[in-house]
Length: 169
Image (cartoon, rainbow, N blue to C red; front, side, top):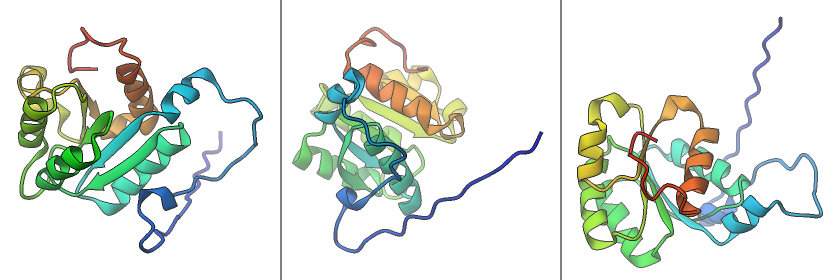
């Protein structure tokens, strides 16, 4: 069995923001799947202190049909951007400078309780579901689980099918 790895480098374009991302198109389709049609009207704020991590998350979400309406590099920027952009969902890292994801999620769930927050972190086991619930996080995902799981979680939360689901999504 031979294992092959591919790496695609997409250098960011200057001053064009999240909309400048592109993922290679393998085949053009005439019809859009129902899940993607719903996603097309969903706006997501991506928050992570790593530029490349934000870029990769944005590429996956946009490829799945979501609109990345903004980005932030820390919890303080996340709160400012969320108030300004009014996204449908926020993907938030835990370990960030100035204000961490748990603190930002607590503020966001108090000021904007209608917006679900997904915590995407390498420290899922450190936070725990009880604390995640207390700070208003709707789901916690480990970054090592892959971005397909993030896309499925985002879709599920935006469809409203997880209103009673615990944060250990």
